[in-house]
Every structure is written in structure tokens, then in C-alpha cells.
Length: 180
Image (cartoon, rainbow, N blue to C red; front, side):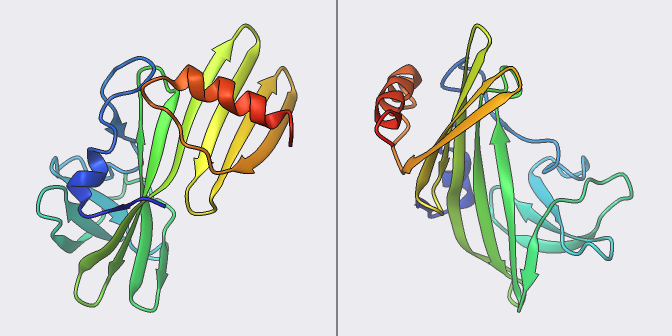
């Protein structure tokens, strides 16, 4: 699993889509409050309108009230630790994304771990859709193919995605999938 030293480093992990070359962005569920351009906002509790703001530059964490039109995001709040995720995606082709897991202490409001949780790249050829999904926490790569109503999933040990040449990764994984 890749651990980042800062939120800035995590956001710069991949800034452009390896397929269409367009700039990546945080998904709409992450941008809960449009009043805060330089901050990400997350629901803190599903039972109240409490939220947490994380400044992208300084990593300062503050509590806030979340407005009623907010989208609540899945998160985990246990024993003073808050875990949530930041989903970065290509809004243009919608074929590449990665998920950053954020863990912070709610007592002294600091991030204590920022890690790459998963990464996904999708290919389309005729009526076949193929997705490579790396689960860095589980240490597995999934090759998922969709053809009409049929779905086939092949689980493999974690394999590196070559973001400079994604098609090479697909060919390599297809060859390995034959043996699993």
C-alpha cells in the first residue's frame, strides 16, 4: 500500500487521466460545500449535520455544520479516529479513478495516515468492457469483464498498473489471468 506524506502529495499522485489526458478532479460527493474552494468537506456523523473541513494546502482540520443540500459520504468514526475517502476521477472519459483513504484523530484534529486505497482503469472494445481494479489495502488486482449481461471477475495478486502505457498492463494481466 502506498502511504503519502501529505494531502498535497496524494492529490498529485496522478493529476491527468492516463487514457484521455484530461485533468482529474475530486468527485462531486467530496465537494460537499461549494463555499469552500480550497477545502474538502466530509460528513462526520450520519445522525447529525456535523462535518469536517480539510484545507487542501495546510491540512488544517476544522469542524463545521453541513448545509442541507450536502451529499453525505460513507465514513467510519471509531474511538476518536475518523476514516473517510477521497475519490479522484476523470470526469471526461470516466475510465480512470483512484481512491485516497484519509485517517485522522478527532481529539487533536490531525491527519495521521493518507494512503492509496484503490485504483481503477477501464477499457472498451466493441461490446466488451474490461476493468482493472487494484485494491492496495487487500493486495489484490481484479480483472473484470462485462459483455452484455455477463460479468466475469478474475482475482490476481497485486500487479502494478503502467499508467504510461495502460494497454500494456491490460495485455500482461490477460496473459496472467489464463493461469488463474
